[in-house]
Amino acid sequence: MSEVTFEVCLEGIDDIYAAKAGGAQRVELCAALVEGGITPSHATIAAAARVGIDVMVMIRPRSGDFDYTARELDVMEADVRYCRSLGVAGVVFGILDPQGQVAGPQVQRLVKAAGPLSITFHRAFDVCRDPFATLDRLRDLGVHRVLTSGQAATVPEGLELIRRLVVAAGDGIGILPGCGITPENVAEVLTYTGAREFHATAFSPLDSRMVHRNAEVYMRVPGLPEYQRQITTPERVKNFLRTAKVG
Image (cartoon, rainbow, N blue to C red; front, side, top):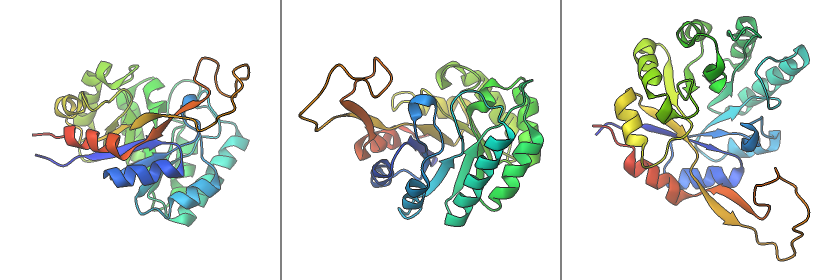
């Protein structure tokens, strides 16, 4: 059986320790996953760098599209340089122009700032105009892997494109399937696409310890439970790793 790499997508320092305890090889650290993930705090990044697991840090100054202003790019570059100073494994970002093509000069600027860090171009790839031209461009710019659901809502719906991307990528750039992968479908995803790494959350619900509760006030998105949240658990990570085997 071939070994595969599980990158756990998560939000906080406790999640990172849980992912490590479960045997994950790598994590992607974000804040506000309900918004698709934005850059976590510097204190959280610094704490993550001390855990002893490869940490990929999301570099995204806001939710929404991937066309950034000059001020936002300045912030992104500063965050990349901070991550580099800590010696984390890598950074995750994605920048497009309004026509849906890779914003080459901006990506090049962040690649240069990252130096020796590993670089993932995130699911901005899934809303680009031409996935194969984009893949070639990112390879030329020095990006190491692309996180993708195959330009579909979830990986199971985008399997065919992911498979073609894996072939097109060869050894020049990695393809990291992510979004909608579960312990039940991960083996099929890896076998069908030929990918040798995958990206998923390993969440389980946790009820709040709060005794006093005010049901009239929303601190989260209306409709989400106010006194329950999702946390990474070692058991959930182990469950993925038990099933993520490729012959």
